[in-house]
Image 1 (tube, rainbow over the protein chains, first blue to last red):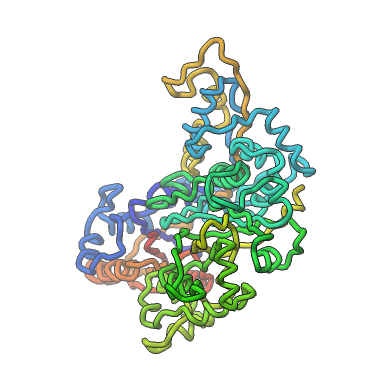
Image 2 (tube, each protein chain N blue to C red):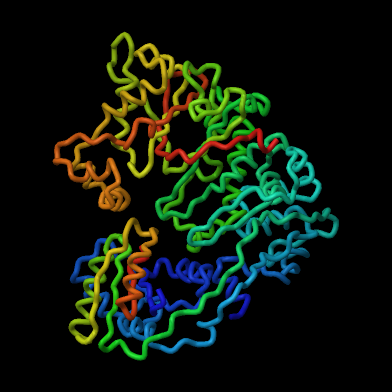
Amino acid sequence: MGVPSVPIITEAYMDLARSVAAERGMPTLRIVFTPHPIWGKTPAQLHVIVDGPDPVTGKAMMKEISDALTTPLSPEDQEPGLQPVSLGPPVFGPNTSDDLQKYFMNNGMTDYLLIDIPTEEKVAAMLKGTSHHPDEEVGKTGGGANGAWHYTVKQVAVNAVMAGCDPEYFPVILAIASSGRLALEGSTTSFCNTMIVNGPIRDKLNMNYGIGALGPFAQPNATIGRAWTLMGKNLGPGAIPGQTYWGSQGNNLNYNNVVIAEDEKSSPWTPFHVQKGFKPEENVVSLFSGWDVRQGHGAKGAGALIPKFDEQIGSMFPTLARMFNCLAILDPLTAKLLVDQGYDTKEKLQDWLWKNTTVTAKEYRESFLAHVWLYPRALAGEQPYATWWKASDDTPIPCWPKADDIAFVVAGGQTNAMFQIGNFNYIGSVSIDKWM
Amino acid sequence: MNRRKLLSLLGMSPVLLTGSRAAAEGGHNGDPKARSTGSAPKFTALSPKGTPPPVMRYSMAPSLSTLEGKTIYLVDTGFFGADLLLQQVADWYQRNMPSVKTVLRKKAGTYPTDDPKLWADIKANGNATIMAIGH
């Protein structure tokens, strides 16, 4: 803008604010802080805050703003130019295994579980899992407030070793890394991530899609998911609590994310990756980001000849946050019972659920997330948000803008007709074959 | 700016700064409990870190000599409470520095969205900006 400017930020974000200012090229940016939070304060309370001190410096807030805008610039404030950043030594040690474990942990490079120490030999073995050159750039991450980091095949391999992966899993991990979507997003709301793996690679790696499909029952499921988390810690700005990670409560699913290998043989429907335009024989990983997975139980219509799983699934939709979409994870038994109900394709089920799971326009407008995230889009004229925002209070509003915001994947051991509902956005699908 | 201070602001552990290799070697690792034994085998481990972008430093806009008679844009980022806070800031100026003209504006889109039209308006018609609230 070319005019002096000062941001007001709540004191809880002091470290983040200064870090972002530095990353964006103004490490001496003059920032004024208020008590935290501001949200929920009355005008009378805010009057006291504005009349009061900056909680970080103790100085009168309005005097600080004035000083920020009028104090002459120092030489440090006017120091343009490119500054390279180094992260220090490319190797650690030599040291004992125990001490290296502690070193990695104490410097925020692990998930606080023991790692497989990434020696040169182990990383070299992991690199044999791909035909790609170790120095080839795989992807970039960040690029928002924290600037884009980039990483190579070798840097990804180090994280894959740490996670306990076998070299055969490496193409899956490279595919995930190439998306630029690393786990451990920094939101105060504590995101988590999900992946669906499709194609023959599931069986080649012995991924589990039977009993305990989402649980700790197979090395590839456990370690591929863990590698995603470790990449989130290490390949980009990282998840440093208070600086690049602000999840107020955190998310337990971050330990190894939700890893789903689709049971393509038992599913009565088209596999997820084929729905996205891939061929059945292609190996693909599809990524999702959101908040949680919750268990569904039973079906509506107790005693009916064919239980109503469509209504049971739909009954959970209004409880989901509409900032994210829906990923329904169905045991093959549940999928088959839905076919008995008449849903011989995923699309038919999507269509029914979209039309028959609604909230009133009043409920929609009163939702915090709709107000923060969707109202600005409504104001900008984006449909359907613009129409929904003006609808009369009783008008039924679908839970999501379009039917294919509801995704399905089939996995499970068929010991019971269960399902789980994930509140996730579909990010995209990536070829694993490319990284073989 | 001191390199260590800059990297510390960037959220990078000072232990990982160039030249701190010694902290990653030996038997202590900064942890007095982590004593290596004489006979245990030792290993060299590769760093799992990605490569950060270089930092382009920008010069700050020249400061004003005074706020008296100036136009200050009060920019609401869209996060809850920002509008009410900035209204209090505007009221403060009206009570205490009535020669300051304040212009309240809400940034377009959600709070991380850029708003080039607003920045152009401020550049053309304003002397300073106060933006709130970062959460």
